[in-house]
Amino acid sequence: MPFVHIKVAGRKIGETDIRRLQEEATKLMVTLMRKRAEATAVLVEQADLSGWSVGGKPLAVAGHIEVKITEGTNTPEERQRFVEAGHALLKSVLGPELSVATYVVVHVIAPGDYGYGGLTQEQRKLASAA
Image (cartoon, rainbow, N blue to C red):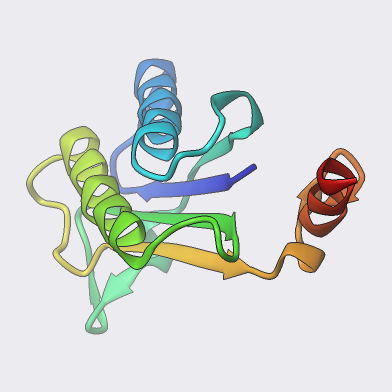
């Protein structure tokens, strides 16, 4: 039940790019992180580029991906592959001028601190074991 938050700036993205980011991010969560597509939420937001800099200098285009997953569900290698693939996805949509200082962050959250449908992941695990 991951949550994927993608922010882009400097290039106005339309419905086609938004859908592509949503679909490709979901596919990465399924193929690289072993998550269920039907429980993967993806939010794509357009940010104001004037608020974004690297090294104190303005950018032409910027992007960022943050993912929240449950602790113990993915190996370090899976997370590393996701970081690599997430950056490649942003670059494919936003173009070659995307800064190398473009971050993909995987937040690993304790099962009791994260959930959906009103239940934590810890509650789900306990219920499935019973």
